[in-house]
Image (cartoon, rainbow, N blue to C red; front, side, top):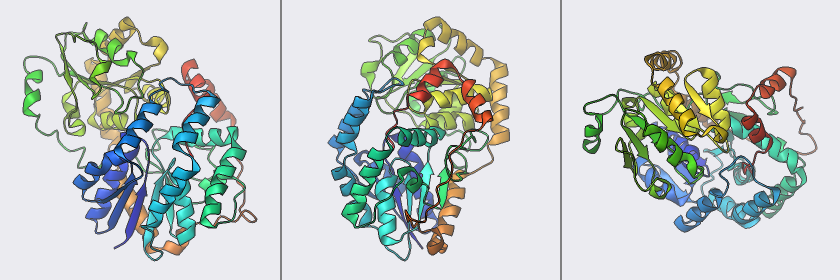
Length: 445
């Protein structure tokens, strides 16, 4: 039996994978503590894993409210610094470090930390000589981390060293390479989804989407209050935006207007009803929440914001997806889905009723449905959660091998290179995605 500390921040797509992982690690006989936002305490209780919050419910709501201001692809330098000074300052990092330290036991503790939650976790790992693994939940995090350091190297070095000084550790001279010091680096997506990671100085092991075979099993019975939606017609369309507020205001209104022209029922899911039109078309029903993974396969199409969680669930359910993406990792995710041929991606410039209606009609064809089913059969054979558990338990069996030791005098700096092939791939992206990638504003420290 080993102890695992799971560290993560932000919203559902960043936290739910760690809850799933913690549940499986616990099932395999290990002790697990999840360190994340207060919102997710009940989720941890349901998974029967330990929990401690970084913050309070009110503090998390304030964080999400502030994030909701950045619904487009660009944030100014002043906006980025204002956000980080409020939500990622040294006092908050010291608090997080103190929380992690409470669960560190030198002999049998492994830290699994998400990119974006890594700084206090790295300090704790070095202090207590605990092995640690660095986990990315989406491809975008890799490039945005490199870009962020390229923009603010001195500032990020200084911030890291301020925390290290509090902990009594020697300073580092390269924030980015410090993040590369864990010997295990994991990406929560499959190689066929995205494997151009040459900009990251060390190898990232791609394990697949964190959805277990159990979660991909046969569709569960529809909830009683939903059964009438499937009566007397074709399978309905699902409309789902972000679980947070990071979706442009026109997302729901434009999509619902377009779906109102389709001779098919639709279910729109959001807890923010204020984003919806005051009156919904007769064929559209609103639900605050749904058992998403349990019944996704009942739908004919999902229209969503491009989050990695929604995207991967739809892939494994074998249904087409229409992605209307505007910020963070979502435009890149949408471009990949379009390239794979299992969905369509529309940037904000194309959020027009007629364009969306046309895309929906194409995606609802039998040809598209068969294409998605075939894709799922070919690529649905990996259980990433089992793979991560195997990696984590291997780390626990050989803790000394996986401890970090960042020595600024001896650490070899790996070159960060972009070859002609990757440049060509970047130049082939739509202009909206290029603009987005050039103006990354993911807060990754």
